[in-house]
Length: 179
Image (cartoon, rainbow, N blue to C red):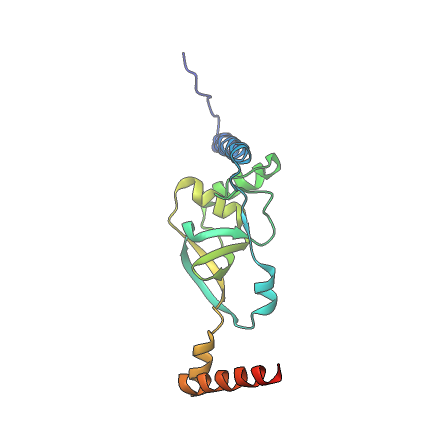
């Protein structure tokens, strides 16, 4: 007796894959709640977007799928492994899967902080890519460079550590004399 479902076409097979992936995600998020773990998708830090003037468009390049850890605005639709959590995502997920089989995908849009990426556009493509084990995905990357440290700023204006130490020492002497 055959216990596996029979599929009439690629769409029904892909819908079945979506359902299995979604069930695993729901089961894992249930266990995460019971054990006190966090299984939610990371959200892009808004203060980084607003306070970082060093944002620049790097361009289109292949990025590792494993380094995509978060989202801009879809944290309730996917879990931390980009598995779908809602049944309403099925149609778009299946369409993304079929488009990969027939054509190439357009590049996703991500924002990079350090070595991690946050998706702005392309959540379903990232979900499909992870489910089939893709290693790299094409993406347009916005890079938020790390803010320069105080020593780098000091070196850029050609000051030395000794002069900054003198400034610190003189300011601490002033604060002691005020008391």
